Image (cartoon, rainbow, N blue to C red; front, top):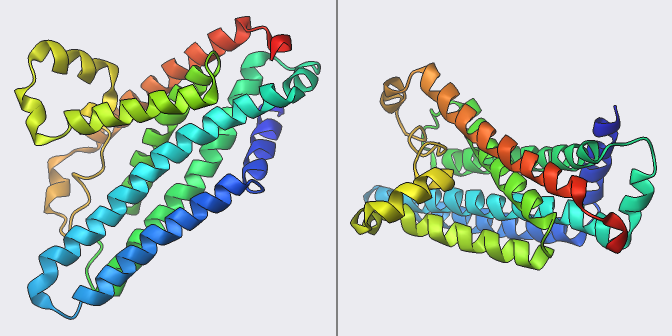
Length: 260
């Protein structure tokens, strides 16, 4: 009950911040760019490849922006309470510190669930506008991004428990840059002593938690992956997020809140 109350308060609090307004404008800008591309190429069959590329680019941009939003929301949800001092009033109640963090984390996940649904809606809109079939199961396009956002939120929440939020977001940006490098075609040229540790530490340097393999115009590619694969991949992401969240709980438990 306490966790649910904090989660709902956190989620509704996000809806009244300027950051969400900015995030909505950025989201709308990406969708608008994709719409312009679809309207430009949909009547020209010879440009079908360009059309598909632009829709995919829009989807990837929205997904990447969601990762930044998840990290920022998690960092801000905790740091804002500590900076304003309201965390002391909250913790004065019969509330454990892990419950406080769990409520904040769940509030962030509610926000990212709404974002994921909006992202799916944008993809459906662009494909229907282009007159293209959309045969990838909706569940895949909701669950996989949401698990990724859970990981980013947990990482940011762990870092912000002992670092300034600006430093936290800088570290997140560096991690994202490293991941982009490691998923590029040239990553195969890096020595194993660099690639292997990064694959272990950063789950996004592999395609395990990516839904791109299933985002297809046909159903054939889906038959290669049994349901057990999806469970294993998603469990890996959830486990990673859970470990990061536990680290945040441990650090937050021993932090002197009165000094903030």
